[in-house]
Image (tube, rainbow, N blue to C red; front, top):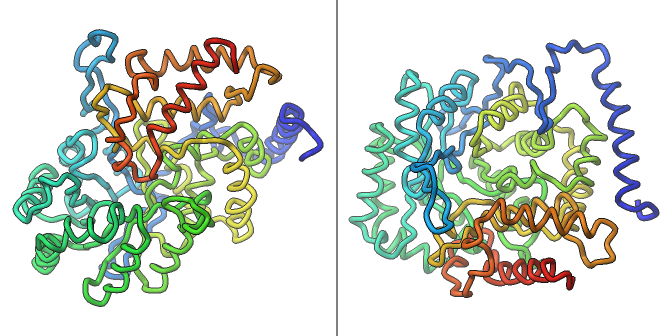
Length: 473
């Protein structure tokens, strides 16, 4: 690998991929494989009765291994145009959400994960409307939501009770199947105590579980591992029914000791497995980054299984862990949903060797690229100065993947990469929302579950953009 340059590698990989594709398709009919769209997704029929399910050992629930994350719902413009260079305001496209939820239910998905904090506070209501409109009986699906009391004014007992009661109302249900303490770990044990212990909110939720208003009680974890360890040390007291963690093959072997944040997926998973606590996976695709890998890595994956989408590797990896109850995916468009269904209808588990290959070789390749670990969760938004922080990072990462972040003017593709970065930047992010408008106030950073030093990264991107504009790179 070290003896050839990137362009030569891609030529070789492309030839190998073409040969392997022919071999993989031999003997299969077009109806079995379907056509392949421009994104590399197969377009063949999706089985309606092939979903893989996992059994919750506590309740006997048969949960689809693919869960629907209702954090990145499709939007539509409220008005045709914006003002003063700002994008047109948007609202959730409820008709499209209804269509997606019905299609998911028809194809076996029965776990829907939302939060009072998602979609600027509108996700729960939209989810409730879509599930009601689906025509499915309430017993046919599971609703997961969260106690998302992040703001100081939300951290009283009264506000915690109100948030939970509002969740029932917006979701149009009498009970919550899976209720989570949302994003514990950020801010350490002091913040956890302030949000859930000192105000009696956790005691209230435990009472609701006793009443049956909550069927399963757990927590989602981001942040300082001492909080995770503390909650598991008190498992005999609280009897956590499930726990949600970030897990994927890129994060598996990371560690706090190495300076990585939100790391130790292997440690988290194995600690839960020891206690027979079912695991719900968030960010199996790292906010879509593992579906939009650098070209070099895509070629490597395609050499192994040319017929599979890049995203399917990440989903099959999570599904191959036996203690995983469900893996969540935020499926904004029908193409996302259809492709993910093909990965899980049914799930074809990875071998131990394939898992280790992803955890080592592919993960190491991924970490060699200067990608900003943004999951596009939008917890940093809105920016008080109008920046579209996630869009800036998404564009930068896209250019990294495509080789359009040149190191200097001597780079082989400097002219093409310079144009692609600058033109794409203006198209992706309105001028008034670009990185040069950041004043470094730092209000965004405490909300980032990936602990990105957002102002520093924005300054770095802005400096890069200015050097590209002035041809001084």
